[in-house]
Amino acid sequence: MEQMRMLSEKLGPQQASELIITMINKKIQLKKLEFMQAWEADHNANHSGLQSEINALIAQREQAIRLIREAQVKGKKVDVDEILEVKLSA
Image 1 (cartoon, rainbow, N blue to C red):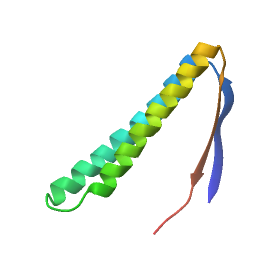
Image 2: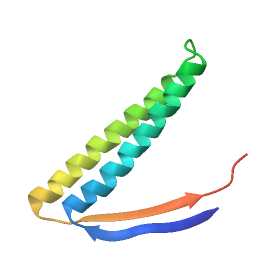
Image 3: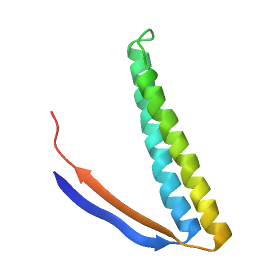
Image 4: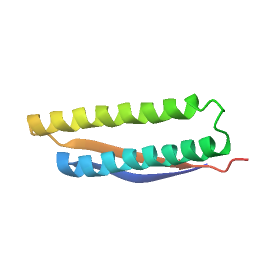
């Protein structure tokens, strides 16, 4: 497994919003694409696991928006620390 520190800094609310919301939106898009591919392969299969993951990401995005709004209102910065773990799998 490899760990890479992608980002570790204090950002203004606007910068943090662009970074965090864009990243979460990309994850949502990827899961929706995976959902559509699974649905096209088998319309009758249970895809609730993928839908739950999408819903969790949407909730995560809403939580991030609330935190960033709070930073804006209080005139604070947002600490962003992102570590990417990469490992091979079967």
